[in-house]
Image (cartoon, rainbow, N blue to C red):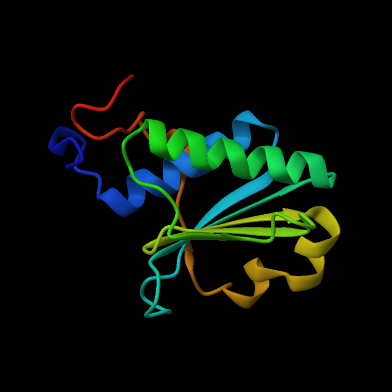
Length: 134
């Protein structure tokens, strides 16, 4: 259970934690989109990019580690680690997209989901499940 004092949903906590983890590894132009009202299969997208395949893998690994460390779960599946052009970490309610910069520009998910509200993840307080290690 997410600490209720924050009033933050588990989905928001996971998305913010993932975005921060990406930023910690120098993810480029990290955004969180609230796609729940527009898309029935998930509630939020975290989108970020790296400048090379090694950085893309590192960002994806950091997201996975930080979300797990915060007690917010593990991905249901991970795709794209082999070529690291577009790594997708599917947490069910949150999908994290880690792109190589040119692949991000090509697929342009921000334009595709331009009607989605952006979540201001940088100003959120630190979030973790009750009882999770700090």
